[in-house]
Length: 183
Image (cartoon, rainbow, N blue to C red; front, side, top):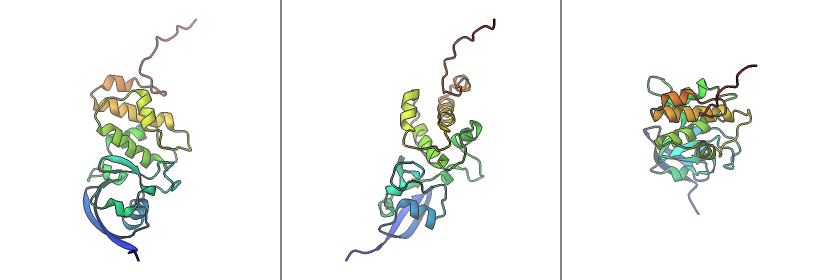
C-alpha cells in the first residue's frame, strides 16, 4: 500500500519551505491552502484557463495539473513573490495597472506570471510571438488588448526603447500612419 502523505521540500518566492502534502494534492492546493498564496487561482482545474500559472524553475506551469509532490527541490514563484520587501510592485505589475489590464482581476495573476516569464528572456518579441506566448490564458472581461499592451510596453522599456514603448496604442501597434487631414 502506497503512502498517502509525503514531505515536500522546495523554495517558494525565495524562501525554503517544508510541507507535508497528500500525494494526490495539486500544487495549487498546496500553495493556496498551506501557504495562503491566494494569487494562485482555482479556475478550470484542468490546465485550460491559466489562472493558476506559477513559475517553476524559470518556466510557467499550470499549478492545477502539477502535483504538489513534484515540487520537491523546485524553485517556485507566485505573484506574491514579485512584490519587493517594501511592497513596491514590479514593473509588469505596475504596467497592468497603468494600462487598465486588470478588470475583475481573476485572471491577472496568471497573466502576470506568464508575462514575467516572457520578459525574463530579455529578447524582443514580435506582436504575433507575444500574442502566442500569452494565449494559454482566458479572460472573461475581454481585457486582452490592455494585457497585450502592458506586456509589450514593459518589454520595450526593459530593452531601453522608451520612445517606442510610449507609442504603443490600444492595438499594440507602434507604427502610426500619418494622420488624415481634416477637410
